[in-house]
Image (cartoon, one colour):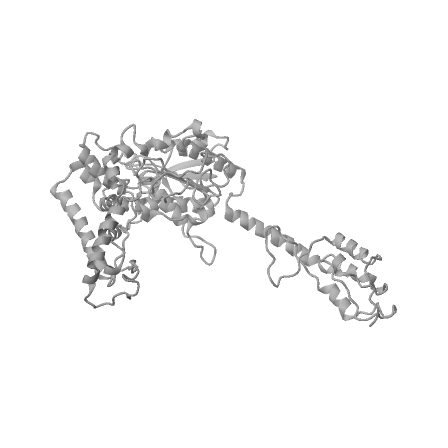
Length: 576
């Protein structure tokens, strides 16, 4: 989120008002940013370049918060063709916040020059928040695609903080939820190349969610990393300030660290604070930078009035598009919040009709002028809905949300570099833990170890089972022939109880003479070719209609067959 540079001398009233906007400045929206426009190599002496043609085992894509982004004058990353990319190497740009995470792998037991971190250039402001974030997403993806084009084996980590955390989340969600085309190719990069995602102050966090969404131990550690982040399984209270940006990470589930500190309202906004949610949505649609700098002026006032008018018009149009809205449980405040989301699409009916008023009436059809019947109940719902959805609003506002979240030296938005608690089972800060995780991911990349993901492990398991099954199928006819050699013995009927399932008992239809026993009768022929089988796989349920399951090897089967001709207590069945 990142109002790191606010004037701390503002009055408390201004701080409360601005914090409502600041909390919401991390939202999803519909303003589509123009893709990064690549340019040819600059000839200016102040612009130095490095190329993506230099390959690394792993590259971290770092996205800073508000104002924390490379500017003109740094060494820009370029493609092998000389096109400038929106990124600078970490050695040429430094961040007071993210450096501790993305530079940590350089201090580990890693191969020299096998790792790099690049900082993404994007607006990183709140003059048009959605434009800034979406530009960051586009630029991050452009960088990964360009590096992959030159270095297809390079692995990636994505790290974002504050406003950059929103960029990191959206980028990771888009990568993880891709669908491969007919040729197995992906539009951005193969999700298996992204080995880790670190989101510091995750505004898209879901209530009750642990720090490692999708992992086997969502409160302890990401998949494949044995070091525990903390003891226990208690979630941080509240939810992210931008519920519209929440969602799963698809193929990246289990490879994401989503950190949130108690009291950081960007990711731990208490529930039942609907008015704050509405104010936050409004703040995402105005020039918050100008409002912060100039306060309320004719220009900022017009900007604010335009946003309010747009929300009001959308609200009334939304209600008018739903003939049964008076019978629904949706309140006017619910509508305002819905249409104030920057990603709201007019014309999408999302309001279900509530249960019948008296238990028997059907929903009123369009055109019937009887909405007044429902007016008393609707007013009651408006009042109760407003009260229930704002139970915590007053408490949050009275508790100085700006100071709580962004106060210099005390704001919880900066806890991730000081939140270690050894006494309670949390030996590392969130930033230190993220750095240690990235270091291990780089060490694995140095060794060429497979990416430790559920998808890769499942594929490897299926491949192993298929290889074993194919090997057994090609040799299944040979061992079965040995079970038919003793047919010349006397007609002893073997009880199925003492026979292993792999050997099919031969039950003669009649006690044929010994001279006729060697004849190639149909049962003997079927015994040779029928029992093709598969090796059982632990944990898998046999499929109906599949070949029988082998329970012994070839040698065991032969031994079992020879043992079945030894006299037993099985009763000989006389000829009928």
